[in-house]
Each structure stands twice: as C-alpha cells, then as structure tokens.
Length: 250
Image (cartoon, rainbow, N blue to C red; front, side):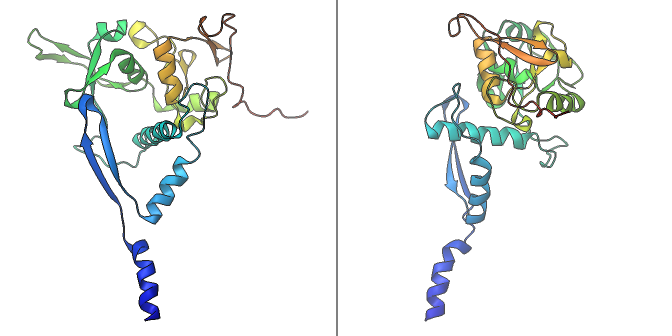
C-alpha cells in the first residue's frame, strides 16, 4: 500500500507531457498552448530566464517580455547547424518583395502562405538573409532566377561577433549570438556588405532601428548611434561600451 502511494505521487512526473497545440490567426499570426514535461520545462525555463529583462526600448509588462524572449529563442534555434533539413534545405521562411518596394520601404512583402509583411519588416529581414533575385514577366512568370547568395557570410558574422562582442545598441547587454547583422546603409539603397557597413543589434533593437530610421555611423569600427531629435534634441552620438574588453593594467 505504501509503495502504491509512492507510485501515485511519482506518476505525474513520469508522464512526458510534451504537447503543443497550434491555431492559425488572421494576418498570419499563430496561437499556441500546451504542456511540457518536468525536464523539458526546466530546460525551457533555464533558456528563457536570462532574456526577458526590462530595457528602455522594450515592453514593460512581463508577458510581452517573455514573448520577445521566446521569439529570440526561435531566432537562435533557426541559426543552429543541427536543425533537420527538408528537401536538402534547413528550415527557413520565404519573403517575396519587389525591389522598388524594398528600396522605398513603403508597401508590403509576402510571406509563405500569402501572409503580408510590412516593407519595413522585409528590409530588416533582408539585412541578414539569403537573397534570390528573380526577374518576372508580365504574368508573374519566372523569366530569370538568379543565384542565391547570403547577404552576410559566416566569416563576416564571426568578425562582427569579435568586434562588437554583443548588441551594438547603447546600454544593451544581449550577447552576439542573440543578434542580427544589420546593414547601416541598406543593400537596396546601394549599401555594401562590408564590415564597415555592418552593425550587430539584437532583434528588438534591429526592429527599432528600421522603424525609427536611426542614423548610424562607425567610429574606429564601433557603431555610433545618432538618436532622433524628437527624443534627444542635442542628438549626442552614443556607443555601447558594455561589451568592450576590460583594460589590462600595464
């Protein structure tokens, strides 16, 4: 009888509990709910806990911060070399946009499943992606598919990690593996994919940069941000000094 009571206590912990329900929402959004086993839940919590810390440019309520942290985990996983492939390709999303819309930043792009994405979001995505140029005919038939090319190479990303050592946005603590590569002058505007034209913001600040059109320059290879006049009238240039290596005493 005593052993039966012990088994009853242990039984819930023995169940896997890894269940995930998905439901499509209007506009391409996704609703999900489910349950994780004790082991999976502990791993998930351990990965999530360091991320949803409040910062001036992010949401204040805990649920929104956890949502952003979860999206960061998804972005990090998508860059993993251990993900399974399908038809020889790693998991990816496709964004279709014409060059004029991408250049002007006004209008929309199309995601998989015919869902719309704003041109500003498409510009952010195109900063660090594989780009496949395609020439279309009048009836949208493909006339000339170009050659797919990464906008930022693996070697350049490693160099960015070594140079910036984390999110380049002032006062942000995010480490480099949580960051995107950002073209200071966008490729659609004639910007080159050179280290002098690249910065390393986290996803939250990458989105902020594109939506507020913040000016960025580089000083000695370090990105320098010029805040907008309506928030900082003096527009004093700012750098993130949190990731600089400690000074070595002579």
